[in-house]
Length: 295
Image 1: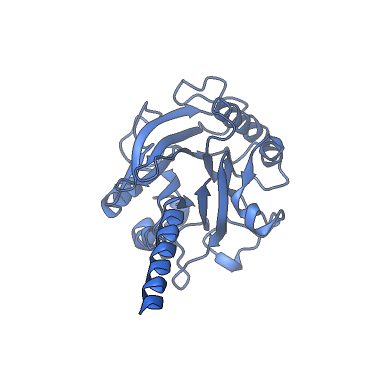
Image 2 (image 1 turned 90 degrees about the vertical axis):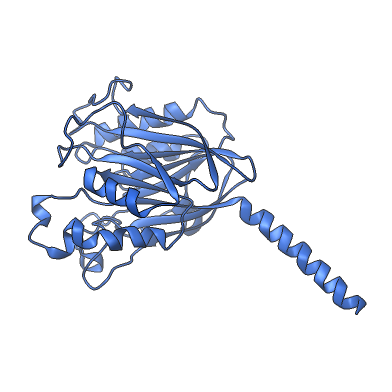
């Protein structure tokens, strides 16, 4: 009987340690969900938002992320995510208006961050533009094809009290020179925080690992990428698959969706999400999911 109680005591102690460890761990996803209502998608039933939206939302929710970063969000997709993601609140859709319209797509897709309201306290947030006038909404520089922005939130874990920052971006899709200048702005803005302060940078970089923007952030002190933390440096295949999955044929077989981090962050796992139902995919991009710990 004595040994029985000793065993139970040890099990309870191990459970407590495990619970404490779990409190420091988080799951994040970055998801380019594809602009809705594009004429190019209309002939293909599996690409139309109304047909794939459940698959898109469920692919994210079934993984139970603590937070997820979306790109290419417009009115109908935002409304649907708000309706379905009851345990989350969001930041980054409204604000100084770069888009004066109230429906449709006008070359503006917003980067929206969702996070669990039961686990995190909202501390602060912001939006700046990836241009020479970062405080002017809709501003453009360096011949970027369209206005690009960065949304960020600062959160506090309600249990541990730990604070961290999440940034959501979508770089220019045409000009490598513009992407290089845009990533410089982001890195420079992040440097106002201490080197050990945890920051997670998610998004569609529209650039592969050999491009100037990715080489630039890799060269900066303290920045690492979660997929590479687990799988090592290298080109492991595309993340933008044009709704074709493994049938996608591209001359540039590149990852362009990344989760970078800086500060006291330890990556535990990171994978590409390839969910689909038949020939229907959640988006024209694979999503990325990662588990990490705030050290």
